[in-house]
Length: 213
Image (cartoon, rainbow, N blue to C red; front, side, top):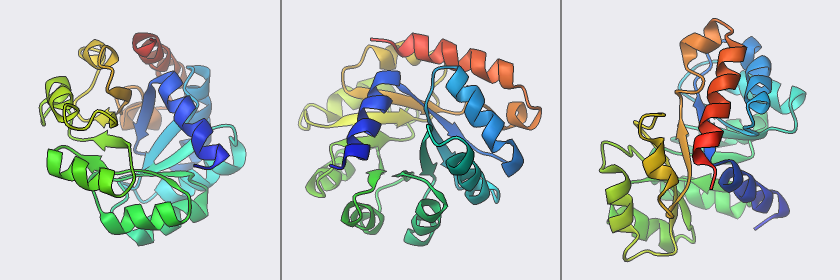
């Protein structure tokens, strides 16, 4: 593991929260990143669900270099290449694509593929991974499912996303198999579009406080 990836792992586990962001206007990426930092969150997953994602990553990489910057919803090597070229330093996928995982590992890029079944987890472990994305968390059984999966895979821990909010975050905070939770509730697209930076900062602070161990 590179020094950067080691620091990334410590940051994610220390904060316990990774905002999953869909940005519609790349011009708002920098003030958004600063709002997250003000709320105590120095990491961000910019999803490739919007046309502005690549430019948003470029802007954050240039203007907010202290942010641990990742790209999410990466479903092809071509997207991974674009994300890394734009400045992303880690890759998150909704599912387990062995080609993407190998591409990242060959380049010492941190990668968190989505898993929600024992078969997917076993395959990820065989590829050399131990921190995975659990998605869609609530729909796939939430904390109870995570605990059951980690019975035969005690070395695995999860960044878990999908249906998580302040209403159920305490369950994940109490689960030793959860490294961090991810979600968009801290910075929803409409709040970003409306430039509600103070509101976003406040929600980030609330989430960080809830995940403290």
